[in-house]
Image 1 (cartoon, rainbow, N blue to C red):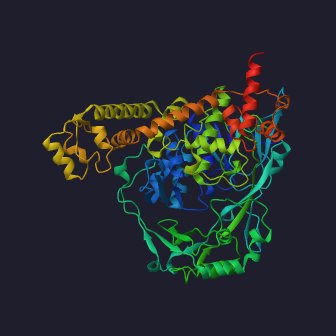
Image 2 (cartoon, helix red, strand yellow):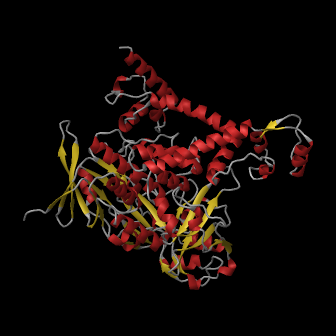
Image 3 (spheres, rainbow, N blue to C red):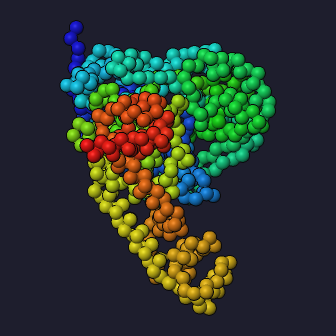
Length: 631
């Protein structure tokens, strides 16, 4: 029987958050793109928590938006509560988080995809990557084959398979061979990838139960409300357009009775019974893990969050589990407010196939197969935001590879996205990777508030940010620079009126003249307060004022971090030849030689971050490179 063949440019395998961003990037760059999904109802699905953003993840969404991505715009249209986290700390760790209406988020993103020029959505399971052998013996993508037998001939493909590859869900002794939310798993692609020399492993993640809102007593919980003034995720969203009434979330806690039930039933947990093969996430553990690993803690936080405006389902954040249903019901009912709860969906763990460490380049192209890229949980990460960020970068780089251009590679001093990808590519991650602010060495520079100033230039250069948008960002930077200069140059004297003003706000009096910038650095004073004496102040947008104030208040710290970045850049600029033979470097320790051969770092800086490569090994490598340069 003849095979049906359809021609396109790029195939995206999987329509989760990574797949959506990858598909939109490719189509918007003018490439004919097909987005495959096992079920069109799963497009941009939120199978776990009902929120976008959060600590460090909010940074990723802002950066994604600055580069031309869609997630920030979509959550601005579909959120039901918004909150800026960590406001009691410095601006480096401020992170925006929004509760989403899950159904609305999915519906809205699907609408964007369905109406995107050059993009076709196709329901079908991709079961094989078709390749040809290049002159150097390496396979190159020429198409993908779906389960019905149809072949889509393409020039590049992007794997965004999420948690679907050979997935199985576990709830106590019950095991179902499905993807998340009971959706069809993808059971055939793994063998095709293994046949191409791609190394895979098993990871595990999980999700808590969903409760019927009518069975919950919220009077026993602490209400968590949204911000009075809502801040948008997208720099293109007008803040005035999204000020609206918000829904509440609720906080409650586990207790000793909860923990006792869990301990008494650990033998029925697939995690502790040895049934689960995959490694779970360290920073998003199940409630069983929390009780065992933090045995000294008398209680754990439980967040009760609405799944949407038009459903009674409530998400029980902080209590993911794979315990049997009877144990789940018993433990949940010990939590204040959940004594009479009704479970709509059981908590479960899910196992799936994903990439082994060392299989990716910094462009997110697989080392084993030319023009095959990967993004999202398939790369060993966790989280919607991490997936979306990788999807955008993989989409951009697949397109520019086909154009013959250099890839977009953001380094650790450019963006949280750079930290994320560098960690996934360079480190030997043995568990699902989660972004955190502590992973970013230069987080004072990589704030969420300045993502547009840092990254719009890349989005514009690679074709996803319009001239008009980029010009606005450039103008914003000009206004910031002018206001910082004005504040530094505007002086006030130690006269009677000024001393009275300072005394009024409880701050030290002046001995000599001072600049507005020096006064702004005082904790008792603010830009708004200084308006009383700053009569020449121009009328400026709030975001410009915010940036000017941060630059002035944190100037010393920012300058110090800039010097650190310059040192970092020196090691990043020290390139390592692609054809280097590490076996020739006799002084290298065996472990370092093995790791360097496996990861093939592009620079000395990247080599220094590989697990098992010590500073002494880096020194040996530098000496060898200098010797080679002299030959």
